[in-house]
Every structure is written in structure tokens, then in C-alpha cells.
Amino acid sequence: MKLKKSFWVSICLLPLIFSACSSTKLSVPIPGRSEAVITNIYIEYLNIADIYFGLEKFDKAETYYKAAMGNKDIYWTAYYKLAKCYVYQSKWGDAQTAYETMLKRDADNNTIKSSIAYIYAMNGNIDKSLELYAELIEKTPESSEILENYICVLLAAEKKEEASVQFDLLKEKFPESKRIEELSKQFEVEQTVEEEGEEEFASEAEET
Image (tube, rainbow, N blue to C red; front, side, top):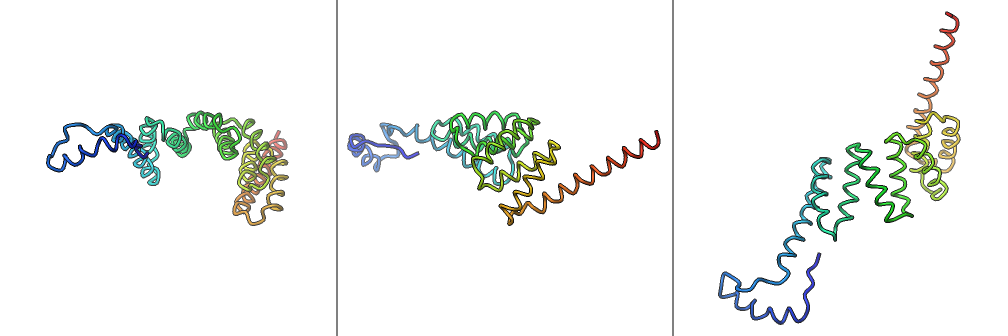
């Protein structure tokens, strides 16, 4: 944050600045200096947190992002990054609270909504996740990532028919998606598990 100085303050400080040249001490403290020092400390907290985040030491980053939030000017920047730390540490309860708080400030932010939909799924709130993903797909039909995640959650909810419909849509609209192969394998695994379950059930029925 840049320190603002009025013209009056600048004029009053001129004699102090020049007199300081002949002395190792200033007789009068510079107005606003302590505020600037404190601000720089919080910015350093943020910088240190960013370094730890880049090193994937998310627990350390979390500590410094919380410290940086002591400055109101960088509070929400630090809060957003803190929320990401929660996600990377699989602290789904904390992550959900943080992202819902941010959504209250920016209710139309689809990026935040997408993150919350993912967090809902990881937090066990499958129905809320599917509901939000369905809403996002209508609002952002150009996003392949949202559709891909929606398919994953459908598979996790064992809604294979709907997942298959959405997967066909993914291949049609986004044929260059890098996750098509990955999702294809997931469908194959689901099909194999289903077939093995049917065979096991048939075998048990015959024995009975």
C-alpha cells in the first residue's frame, strides 16, 4: 500500500529532512511511519505465505495467510488464498465455510460456485453438489471443466445413465478434452464392477 502524503505534510517535513543530514537521530518522528512499517509486515506475511503455497507446504501457508488477514487492505486476497489452502489440505469443512463466505460477497461468481460444487462432493453432500453443477452447466455451457466434474460426481452417486448421457455430450461438444480418456476408463471400471456383481449374485443364487 502506497503511503499518501499531503502537500502540507511534505512542506512541514522539509526542514526535518535536511536537518537529519547532520544528525544520526530525528528529533521528531515521521508522521505515518509506524503505519507504513505495520503495513509492510502484513505484506511480508502474504509474500511468505505465497512462497510456502508455491512449495506446496500448505499448512505453513495457512498460518501466514491468517496472519496477513490482520490488514484490512489485503484481507480478502489472503482469505481467498487461505480457502485454497483448505482445499489442498482436504479440510473440506473449513473450505466449504470459506467459499460460501466468498460467494455471499460475489453471488454471481461461477468460478466460486464451481469450487463449492466440488467441495460439496468431497464433503459428502452429493445431492447439493449435483444440484449446483446442473445449475452451472446451464449458465456456463462453454465450460468443459464443469461438465467433466459433473460427470465424475454422477458416477460417484452411481447415476450411471445420466453420467453416460453427459459423457456423450462432452465428447460431442469438447472432442479435444484431455479427460475423455480418463473418464472412459472410469466407465469401463464401473461396467466391470457391475458385471462382476451380477455374476456373483447369480452364483450365490445358484448355490442357494
